[in-house]
Amino acid sequence: MGTLLASFFGAAMIAAAFAYFNYKFSEYKFINFDAWVFYTQKEIFTPSADRYIVLFFSSKSPNTVDLIKNSKSSYPIIAIDYYQQRITSNANVTFLRSGTNTMLKFIQRFNIYRSPSVFIIKKSKEKLYKQDSMIRELDTLQKLSTKIEEL
Image 1 (cartoon, rainbow, N blue to C red):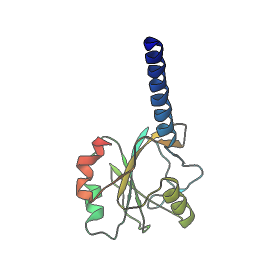
Image 2 (cartoon, rainbow, N blue to C red; image 1 turned 90 degrees about the vertical axis):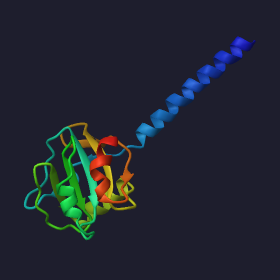
Image 3 (cartoon, helix red, strand yellow; image 1 turned 180 degrees about the horizontal axis):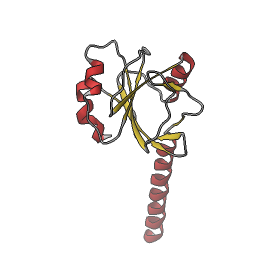
């Protein structure tokens, strides 16, 4: 009787763990760059890398743009400015802006409550990307270089 109860309990634990991780994975959201149009300084953004670090930030904070431009990471960075300023991109960081409707959809889809926030997206299909990490809120962008690799 004890072994039967133990095997039932073990199977229940495995099923619960599987269900929990399936649920956590399904929480991650998609971003379709065909449906949502983002702009670089002069043109429509078309993703080309397999993974990106997405950074949602406010350009009104002091030294923000300089800190982002000087950050180092193993993936290219997509920096989306809440205030929609035209900022010149560099080799590692692409600054994006969008229309109000797209920005509101982006904020709502990813449940962004604070700025700066950062997460990773991974290519699923041609222009369809899936969130590949939890959304992290940064206290300051000075932590950006050290925290990116921990996502």
